[in-house]
Every structure is written in structure tokens, then in C-alpha cells.
Image (tube, rainbow, N blue to C red):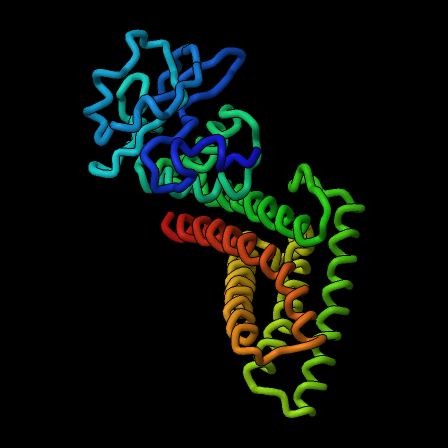
Amino acid sequence: MDLGESILGLNGQTQEKLVRGCPCYREFGESVCLNDDDVMPVSAISVDTSFFEHVRSHLDLEEMKSDSEGMCYLLIFLDRTDGYCYCVSQNRPLMIDGKHVTVSDIDGALQFVTNTEKSSDGLLCSECLYKYLRTLGEASEGYLTDSERETIIGQYIKEVGYRMASELSGTTVENPLHVTENQKNRIRERIQEVSKSRSRWASVLLRLKRSGTDGDVIDLIDNYRSLHRLEAVFLHQVLQLDEDTEHNNPSTNLRFMQGTSRKLLSLTQAIRRQTETLVNEHKVEGELKTLLLRSAEKRREMEPRFSNLTSVLSEIGAHTTSQ
């Protein structure tokens, strides 16, 4: 199950008010709550979010909170009126290192966590949320040195990069921080496949130009050629994350990968619009139409992936530059 399904309370959108999982919930031999930097043993239970659908403010939680201080619902309420997050079972504001956990922090954490972590339970979700807040959220200020933050950000980039590269290569990377040589070889094979596809698109482009084909069709084919070129660039960037060179630093890697993912996303979106227009206007027929429709299936798979990747990298970048 994708973690996005397990931690969002209602419709699977980061703008909702209830989140399954809490950054203050941890297990150290037994379940504990770390809210307000305390260590309180708790009993965690799963509560259906539908019980709290009518809640509009954290003030509404008062009559619904648990009678026991040691009860945890593994639910947090995002009060978008005052901008803070609250423990549903105790109706207490979430505090980490003496600072309020803000709605914007949790929104950012959800954007990152739901696109990079996979789990079937809420416990991992809670650990991931806490890790994010401690690394990139407002609560991280003064908690990590610049060097420590750079190291963790580098791990984030490697994780999301290798997950994406594995999806594009049709393989599985269970631990993106420890990728095997066989898994890297599969990515290298994908680079070769993409390079061959790029050459084929270049040949089609040349043939169409010589035949005086409509300019809009030429632009579409050229975009497909560029798409394959940038996919190869992205895969190379991922493989270089493991290289131990003076130029291999998290900030540089983040900037380059952000630029590539944004361009890839822009191209996939442009190709979708162009293909729909040209097919509807009957400007492509026969073998070319078949080729475009077949290629559109792969493009449809890429667009949401790079949309997610772009969001994640932008989130990391925004918090990195704001520290």
C-alpha cells in the first residue's frame, strides 16, 4: 500500500484536515508520545476518521478527546484557521523542540513522505513525518548542523532519485541507500535503450522534415526526441550520486535534478496536449499515428511520476534554502 493511502484521513489530498499517523508517536521497546519533548507511554489504537468529519476547529475536539492521558488515536488535526496541528486524542498542540508543528510543515511532510515512502502501517508514517520535521521543517532550526543537514538531504535525494530510476528501468530497488551493482546495471541498460529510442525519433524527425510534414507534427516528434535525451540525462545524474568527487554535493545534485525533472515534466505535458490536438484534427494518420499512440502510453506513465518527483525536489529545495 502506498503510504499516501495510509496517512491521509479523508480524500487522499494534502489539504485535508485529518492525518493518520503522528510525528510525536514512536516505539522504543513500547509505544511512547514525544509531544512537547516529553516521553509519555501510550496505548495506540486505530480510530476511523469518519468520527471526526464534523470537526472544523481544534476547539471541537475538546468534547471528543480521550478520558485517558495515555490513549493515542494516531490522528492529528490540521487546524487551517490558526495554522497549527493538534493531537486528536488529547486535543493538545503538537510541539517539537519547544516549537509548534505548523500546518504548512505537515503539508510539506505529506508531499514528501507520500511520494517517497511506502508502508502498510501507520508506524513508519509517524517515523517519516518526524524525520522530515527534524530535517527540513521549522522544528529543525538549530537542531542540525549544516553538515548534518547536507548529509540527510543527500540521502533524501538519493532515495527519491533511485526510486524513480528503478521505476523507469522496470526494476525494484528495496533500499535506495544501498543499491546493488546489478540494479545499477539495469539502469545503465535503460540508458542504452533510451539512447536508441532517441536515435529512432531523430530518424523519424529527419524523414518528416524532408517530406514537408506539418510543423506541429514536427514539433511533437522533436519533443519526443528531447524527452528521451532528458530521461538519459536524469538516469546518468542518479548513477552519479554514488560517485565520490569534490563536485558531488547535495546542493548541486538537488539543483541539477530539479532542473531535469521540471523539464521532463514540462515535455510530457506538452506532448500530451500536442498529441490530443493533432489526433483530434486528423493531422496524423497511418504508421505515424500508431507510433504516437503507442508512445503515449509510456508518456502517460512518466507524467505523474515526474510530477511527484518535481514536487518532492521542490519541497526539499524550498526548505533547504529557507534554513
